[in-house]
Length: 114
Length: 110
Image 1 (cartoon, rainbow over the protein chains, first blue to last red):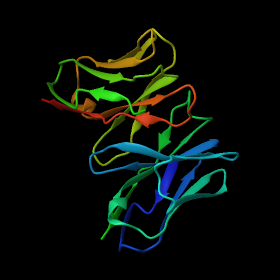
Image 2 (cartoon, rainbow over the protein chains, first blue to last red):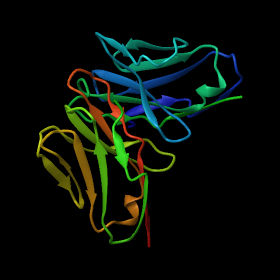
Image 3 (cartoon, helix red, strand yellow):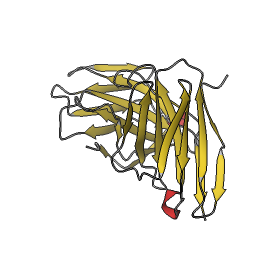
Image 4 (cartoon, each protein chain N blue to C red):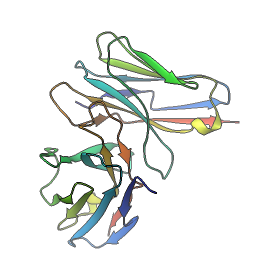
């Protein structure tokens, strides 16, 4: 069983469209994350979320919004896609806050905006 | 707040050793090390919490200096499977968000 899964694996879309990426973890973890990895492999946190608190990285445009229907899922919605949004997006989870726990990463979603 | 990693890239022959450094301008709560192979997700290696701590498994180990501002990852007798990009992730005392270094690309050749 895959611990952290993401769909879709690849996403190609036009500028201006709205898209979503889904993430599910079956580890029973309390905290989930979204990361963006750009073409230079720089890995940057976008959001961290547990059932009590959403923490948003201040540099993330408000076109990006996480939505969590339950503890095991954290989806990423992106409105009005731009060329600069092209990247690999990783979902991750950890048992507690992630301060002392390892994070388990999903396989990634490669988003290409044309 | 992003840690500084060095070197950016290193090429080794099988059996050689490498050291990857991760530095912060502020004292850190913890340092996490991850390895990412091409086209795959980052995979956790280890976490260090205490100043002066050293830990490791197999031939990959890491240290955290006393001031908790620098960590080093040591790869000894490297194997082909060690190839990949190594990231350090750091957490400050007043923040729960992990900040990753720019990565060190390690290539091990036969």
